[in-house]
Image 1 (tube, rainbow, N blue to C red):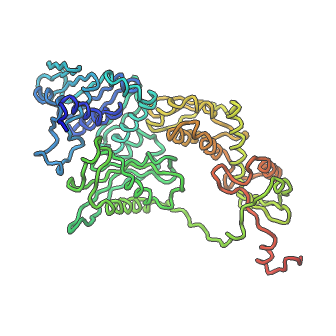
Image 2 (image 1 turned 180 degrees about the vertical axis):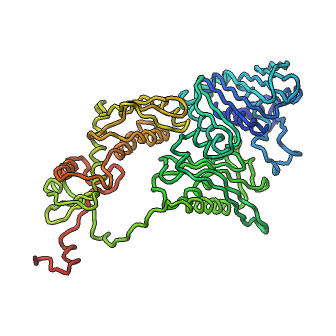
Image 3 (image 1 turned 120 degrees about the vertical axis):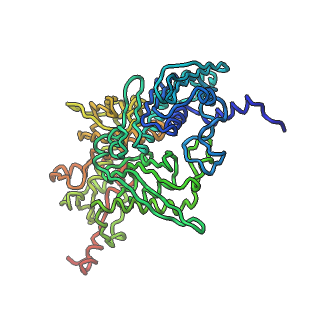
Length: 548
């Protein structure tokens, strides 16, 4: 057993803090927020290893403070060494030193004096000189991981790394609306929030007009029991209406005392607050800041502070759930309750060969949703959406396999407002999107221009299907999730409730369904065809099955 030397300790610490370019951005943005800035401008070149520049107008540092700031374990954020009383975002005193250990760092700052200070760190060389700068701090990081080739080579594709950066910056922009935040990539502005303090204004800049318009704000306070005492829990933020959902839970953004964190328990509490307003496979768009007394939050449980520990965590989650539910209940959003019908025993999925549908004769429809057919003494009830979904899926799957995905041009092209991370994903997955039938590209300002969309079976996919497709692509390798992608795309152009079909079209749909490889389930596993036998109808009408 021996003590590690200082150099080894520093390298281990740098590895804990600086794992990829997004972590550099997080550390610098949090430093700026702790400095009381009103504005943060983030500039990124390439994947972030080339250059990251973060500018703020906070309180800045004196020459002595700037020189000390790049040393290991120096901080202005830990009051009297009391970890339990930390009220800032950063406190470890490792960020700048750890970044300088794996990159070339330049710190330019001024605390409001007649001249500023520039500190340049290049390996072991540290230079300090006067510089012209107004109050605030600028940190420029170049050649990240230039001395860690294995770590640099382990990074994802440049577009994916920038996607991670934009997602993190967007989280701070949404959850700290009082601070104006801008993000630029390769000289192009991705988004910029105004810093008005209104969550709606931040959402407008990051997500676009639709999310900002279709949302409500939340400002609630509750008191929960902690041991023998009580503790206040404040919840503030923005809740998008259930009409605005995403296929991924990453758009439920949670902060604790202003720090964006990964807290699955609080995310689940938010979604429970939406209750039956959400479909089972959809997630809301939420930006929620939960404020607690500093003594109730332990931020020292993760090397990169991505999660925190809470006192009375279950009670806090319950308070968040109630606050979300109450905020949504003031809007007329509740769906009508499902009508319970005791038909489970009678409506069994059809099992058998394709000949069941081949002999089916179309006889009518119900509520422009269900097609009614007669076949072999049974009444077949066919869900036209599920049936059309299966047909679209198999046709689209065959087209992608042949490299000839059907698509339709949009004239004029459509524009779609996406989050910064989703815009970055358009570039990351450009080849796969093209194979699926999308022709799209970033258009600036958080928008994507869509020139063509998939058109299975002659029906054009809604432009919004791009968002769901991107979410699936971002969750894993495209090849591994191909069937899931095709199922999602097949759903969007399929017939919906209320879509009217002519009799001949309805008959053709049934016939086409019967020709599918798997005609009795939609791509998501739900049944397409249910049967009610004559015996069940006879019993219901108190008739003898053999009497007409």
